[in-house]
Image 1 (cartoon, protein in one colour):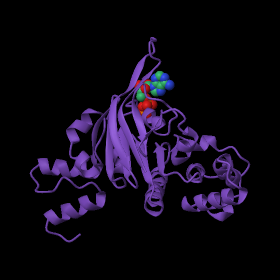
Image 2 (image 1 turned 30 degrees about the vertical axis):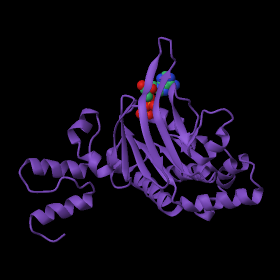
Image 3 (image 1 turned 90 degrees about the vertical axis):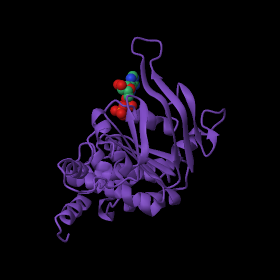
Image 4 (image 1 turned 120 degrees about the vertical axis):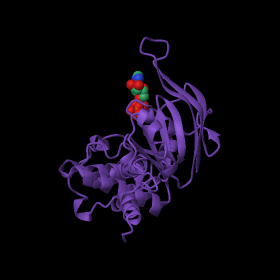
Length: 284
Ligand code: ADP
């Protein structure tokens, strides 16, 4: 799998008073098995970009290539692309509608035209992959907890066996425990299934301990693209875009400014704790 986003622009409502350039000259490449965070302030263009990745939106200019083929070319099978690039929208639980959880997760693969046996096998595996117990399979989706609903919705997309999974603000509206639960599911889907996972978030803290690569959007432009640790080193630039670096890194960089000889390229709380203890000559 490879996606190339090549110099795309997207303009909403062109030629009207509501004209809005939401994407401006965005270029990047995503390869098999990558774990990417797409971050940016609200309105920076993240969701618009996500909708382009599976062909739900077309760029105003520029192109998107999936496995080397322009997805805007004539006769391109967009339906199959939508199975390969699974998009989990914000608040996906609003799209749960069948009478029970299992039937809901079967909806996608059934729509792909798969046989009932294969459909059910996929639904079972997907629900297991997101940590939903068998005894919850046949309850109404409306009786699930908030976190379970969201996991069931992710299972519905997973059942299509995507090569790329795009999660748009998967932590929105969840408490810290719920957020961590969803992110550790994203980790395990990336690790166990080996698929490319792209998590969209406006919170760098949510992503710091999870993704490997970070794409930063600002006012429709892709302004940074690199390993998460390197991106976080640009604290002032990020803060000027309304993005806070992870708390652990902010503390280390403040201590460094105050003259303490700490490293400031560490991003997890555990790393920061060890580093501070090291500087004071104590064992972690
Ligand atoms: P994000 O996901 O980073 O919050 P969006 O992609 O939703 O950003 O929005 C990018 C910009 O495009 C914003 O200025 C937003 O107001 C505008 N926008 C989004 N959707 C539409 C739409 N359907 N019509 C017009 N403008 C839109």
